[in-house]
Length: 524
Image (tube, rainbow, N blue to C red; front, side):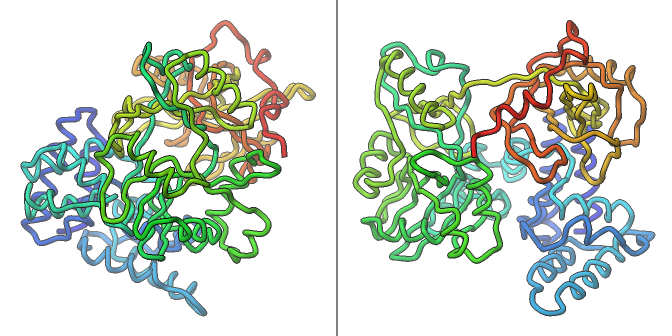
């Protein structure tokens, strides 16, 4: 199968808002991959905008200067996958030059459309509509199997590609053979959200409240003394967390899979998220970094124990076994049916410096990959009134609408606004402006339509990707916190920003100041 065929499908998926049309286009291409002998798992990843190799050591800078594109398509999916794999394993002396030469060779065979598509794939900035839900449905349709069976298999396998290959070549019987494997990451269970404790609790029903830690989600696999650690995105970070490896290796089990969180603490209080995050991102010597930023290990679930899979077992039984296996590492937890007691626990967690709580159903199985009623997170909501200073054109279902808004805060001393300076794939130059953040979350279709019209009225420039606007429209933004940022000149960035409403009753001069944004920074 030619790469151009995959790209054509990606374009078709991005061009329609119809879920059925997306599924039809994807499933047709998956069937064609099987018929042509192409690697289905690779085609599936490509259609989902996922690089199978995850990282190959090439960023935007490595693709800044490329050869002239080919006039006609000739690249095969197998050739591209082999080339990217070869680039990813280059290391040692002379590898930079070898990598540049390999990138030039691959891109020299690609058409202009293929070059643009490959850039997006490699940098993780693919803009198309094949989300996880659509892709799993497409796999089920293409293989003529039950969608729930596909979802369960993907939960256990971690990635959709191998499941697509199994379903399309072996049908339902092959999906039944996809089981939890110690040492292979599975998808993590996710939590829905509630605005407050009362909303998350049902009258008279006992629930568990787990302390919600602002750390790094970790899935730990223990196999007869061998430990592997995976992040929420299923990246292997075993070598970067030696103290976590030691903690898991010391557990009273031969084989186990645990779900939890690691977090940097000082004097019993959590450190800012970035301190913890720097441990999973750092390429420095792990043992040296460990002494500078030690991590505490907490677990809140047990998915496998000594040959027994527990994902279908009620949570209360899983937690009981967890307390036996890792008694020193269980996350702070309260079992209660009393709203007042739950609210006090929530307040205590906030006072201790944590994010909030996760309310969990004691009888729920471990259902990974989808947000449901089994887990419900409750966090205090912060809001700021900021100004929209630029907007990005949407893609996929949002094609034709202005979507991702850039947010600015007012400088009370100079009267100037504080504005984002960077966008995807490049830099927007605005002397005197520094970033606060941007978001596309919380927008309804009605809001998207309104803001597209509104920001076209305020437009001062449009480069085809980002529309710069006059700083006049105030928007109320909810966010989970503010973190220090070395990426942005302003030194701060909002975490998990989302739109609450547009404030047509406020002028830009009434927007919150940069000092107000900075006041949410956690204490060092």
